[in-house]
Length: 139
Image 1 (cartoon, one colour):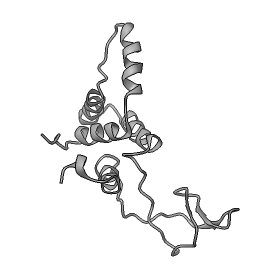
Image 2 (cartoon, rainbow, N blue to C red):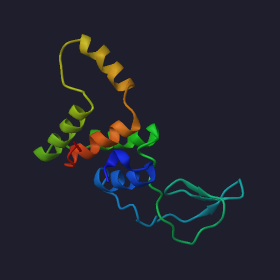
Image 3 (cartoon, one colour):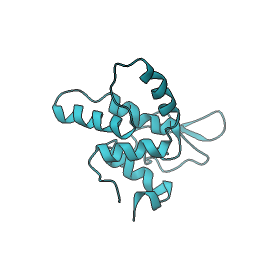
Image 4 (cartoon, rainbow, N blue to C red):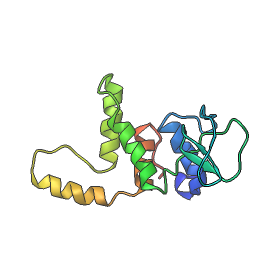
């Protein structure tokens, strides 16, 4: 099945694993605490439950493909990659190229870049991350 044909609940774990390098089935190390609203809160993964789940719980996978807050974590992940070794710098540059951002010293480029950034969607950021990590674009 193509990524574009998958529902978000199937897309997000793929992005979590391939782009972010995190196991979607990982257990959270946090300890649940009762919150003020008579539910349970985990300070480690910032997740709320209406009923107390089992003592160990899975770390929730962010909604990368539908939430700009979650998708921005992908952008931040690439921004924080080191420039060395070369493969990391290349991955970062490839991610930016997939989003349409090319380095330029022309001042008029900045206005065009702001318009470009405003057009990004969470899914576009996910796809750029997958392609930068070596997943080929489906034809």
